[in-house]
Length: 263
Image (cartoon, rainbow, N blue to C red; front, top):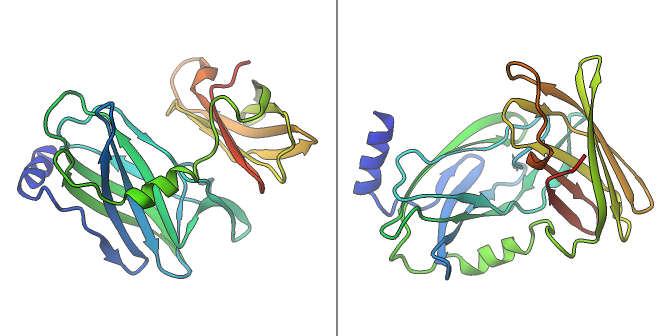
């Protein structure tokens, strides 16, 4: 029923993509442009009032990660995000990852097939000032046939994403999982061609049954180690798929993101 209602709204209000303002600021959808491969490069722009912040995709135990629900969208296949490098912030003695002021989150959408593409996005996210509260924004928009929008902002945001793939100066990476008194412990050892100043590492798993806490990071020259508690909430014995891991390292001079971590 909810999906049908959302779809009906999307049909009736194809241009409901303007900024939605609240006490913390506003969020708006930038419809971007269509790429040569048929995908659409759009973005969400968070314009936060002074003193407010929002969170990165994996903010740590004190943060609220955003949730993207696309129910009711038409002709949407793969969705990918190019998260800008987050700030490392101290929140009442706990480290969180997030953003102040203005943040543009590029979102790339590949249609399932040719034809119209309609967005029905229910975004749930957290914002913090003196207190932390959950927030919500709903966007309905038609992408195909739309004029280009927000190109300069999106292109600038894409340049702020961590380096990935070849050429990031990574010599080697290895991960290991071992039992601990409270579940498991996961470690990631990375060797770079050049040191990363003041590295802060994050380890994520695409497996929803696996939770990885914020790691303790250390560096010795160009070597970076990250160690974190890990819990398994699935049924049966855990089967660790190291290809589902993402290891990110944020430093003062640069940031890198590595997909997959071999044993």
